[in-house]
Image 1: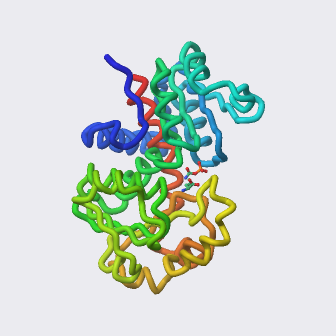
Image 2: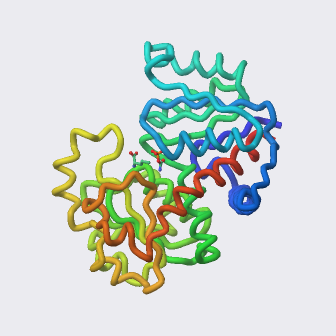
Amino acid sequence: MSIRHFITLNSLSRKELESIINRALELKEQIKHKKYTTTLNNRVLGMIFEKSSTRTRVSFETGMAQLGGHAIYLAPTGTQIGRGEPLKDTARVLSKMVDCIMVRTFEHEKLEEFTNYSDVPVINGLSDSFHPCQLLADLLTYTEARGSIENKKVVWLGDGNNMCHSYMNAARIFNFELVISCPKDFVPASEIYELSKENTSIEHDPFKAVEKADLVITDVWASMGQESEQKDRKEKFIKYQVNSEIMACAKSNALFMHCLPAHRDEEVTEEILEGQQSVVWEEAGNRLHSSKALLEFLLN
Ligand code: CP
Ligand code: NVA
């Protein structure tokens, strides 16, 4: 059988993604009873991080340990990657030693190139264009809290960034309505929009966008790599802040999600982040269970 990678949500079918979410629920339940299934005994995951991480690193590292395997953290400094060894060389070398490789990098094309040279499954741990692992956790969180996301109204407020792109993929695959509300100069990439346009629309007025929403999501206004634009973006995005006025336009039982890290009182107010509609801590914790289910899927 050919190797399966997880580069975007489109790498897997809806059925496969649903099986991962269901397995994550099972694994989560087992942990509550202190039961650990060691389905990845002796298997090793290599993790290349060219950007910072807390959740992604800890979820994959803990996940591998709980499943009986091991994970190796490869930082830009202290490895030859940081000294310029090409990713395509690293891909071939690591493929001879580890069973799976997770990569967090900048340009999505670098990840695609890496995948072409890898003999083992590659996981996108975030690129400038997509963050599919976070979507697994978000879908798991929504399913646990409210059941199926199909036909629900999901509203993305803020930057048309990597997370937004992955939500666009999810809208098409899981058939929910996605409304994106962003400043005119920060719309998502047109080629990704084209693919999901039957499920996705853009509404620049945030109050109109959130009307009757079942789920409201946001993310930082300046992603990793865009730090120099932080101040300028803060001024341009202010009307897209998720606050109590915005949430009041959504359904009364609407949920709020954020992949974290959050910038309090920028893209979301403290009140909403810590409020009753927020499921961000559950969402972050679900990174562990969804990462484990993904690893099992790709490795077994
Ligand atoms: N949400 C997320 O990917 O967090 P980290 O950057 O901490 O991994
Ligand atoms: N859009 C954010 C997500 C962080 C998990 C970034 O790329 O920095």
